[in-house]
Length: 75
Ligand SMILES: [Zn+2]
Ligand SMILES: [Zn+2]
Image 1 (cartoon, helix red, strand yellow):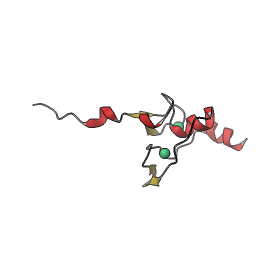
Image 2 (spheres, protein in one colour):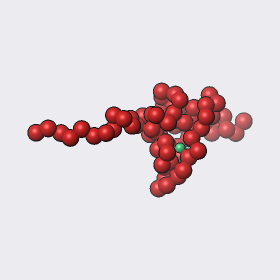
Image 3 (cartoon, rainbow, N blue to C red):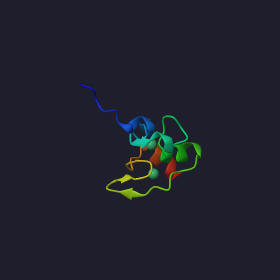
Image 4 (tube, helix red, strand yellow):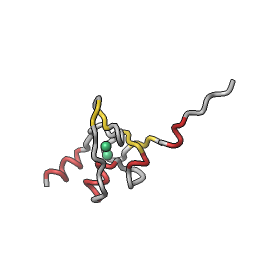
């Protein structure tokens, strides 16, 4: 039996190395960071984030922040 191929290949979901949140790879400029972490750590353009049911509908970031990110934001 053949499995139906999902369209996930076009919208691969990655996992952020920093905050651990899943995110839409196409939405981030960095290979291993969500748009939020890439923005805070490297100054890349952030996603405008539209939260619905606990995650951003645009990039899928779930609002997670690592201790390091919190530390950077406090500075
Ligand atoms: Zn992140
Ligand atoms: Zn977002």
